[in-house]
Length: 306
View 1 (cartoon, rainbow, N blue to C red):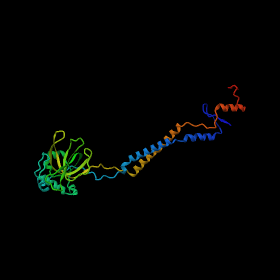
View 2: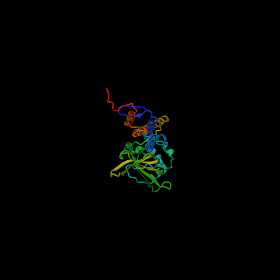
View 3: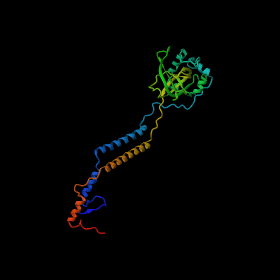
View 4: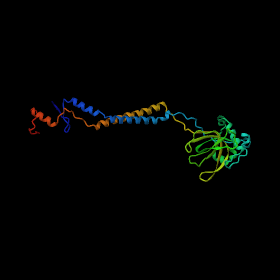
């Protein structure tokens, strides 16, 4: 039996030990079951991450298209004549800067707005309310059909005294900017709103400018803001940007490549941590040298020569 010397400090294996070498390689490549489970867990986690990253491609479109609010309304014409002809004169004697007091004219206004269809009312909207100008010149804005968008700060039902059975309640609310101070608008909606989360949902409202209202805020400060009678109200849904097919496939491919690379890395690390198993038939260095000495091929007592 011959001996292959691989290096100065390396193990000597029998030259005929091919089966022993195969056994060593096989033992290295064997991976414990817990390692396989860990690798599968990593692959599942990476796949879930890829699905989560691509979730917008599977989302449905918004329930209603977001309203374009870029254009400001510009009230014009003889406002006195316009107001006199609207809603059977319900806006003629509107008193700016007063509280939420109700009267026959207010109830008549509510009933007329409620009787309009959503499409007809929306077709009359001229643009976005100019908050500062409406507060400064409310008479010029009275009777203008406008829209506003803002964070919902309050929304609750209020009983209407003197109204018919078709209008038992209005839904009084406040919208404004996220700071809670700028561009606050008060409104009474004549149609029941859907589910709304206060201080979270942004509302799109379409209404007719009634007057300015003066009220005491929760901070104790008196405020005067525009007051709308609202026919259409909806929760603003930001537009969904869907991924194209090519972009979606590219993202899925990248996730798959990362998953495969992670699996190969874990397999390599698992293999390196398992020490090579020596063949059962292999012998130690001392035994091999003694066997060859007995055969006369090597004299262990012979002095070394240069």
